[in-house]
Image 1 (cartoon, rainbow, N blue to C red):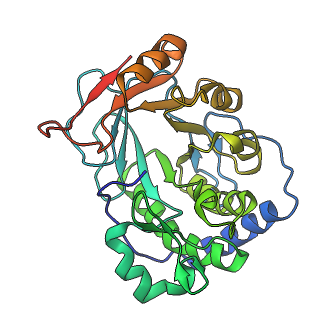
Image 2: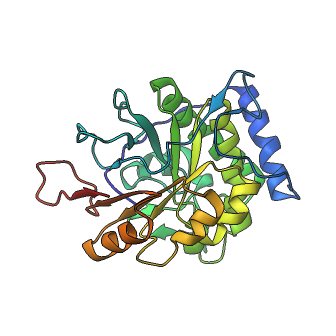
Length: 289
């Protein structure tokens, strides 16, 4: 989902890059390790003391990836852009656009990393809904290079005190004109997830229900953020993989009611406006159940 989200640039430490490349190669090949179960765990690489835990199940949630603001009383979990600061006293999820460029960052990507942008017949492949260029995750070398850039954002999330990570556009391969595969998306997700776990961050699968079962085991995602799963009758696909560790975001009243009626006793469910705007905006909508 595209919004007016910020962007940062950086490089991760060389040791972290080596770990990222090794994990990505494993998933792209024949990685068959068992599922990582939700709850505090030791990181697969990095400091032995690194642990992470998903957000509490069925906790009141607020989706603030468009603009950070003071949450309503009772909110326990919030997702904010990685440019923002975490909310005091809450479980904070850090949003990064890991598979596509931000529209406002397109110039930087073209100038600095044009080779990491997806091209087809000499033209950039663009997500027309959000005017975002797809990142090229189609080879192990490019996935490793992209993981250096996005890994720096993840490092910043951890340094600020976020506890979770939301990596958007996991489904970019479906908009790639056949140039990218689900396997490419999974291999890249494994790089980022291992890096995040080493920094003590739980990681969400964002949308893409058709990969939920595979992603839970091959990538090691800890929970899911599912936009419009009631609208598309996909919620069961997420709960079968993640149990009650699913956050549902609906954008219209009818499907919000449907989600609450079907899953309100077990899942975190929120209705937001599609601009994910802040209070005071004419488009602002927030409801929870």
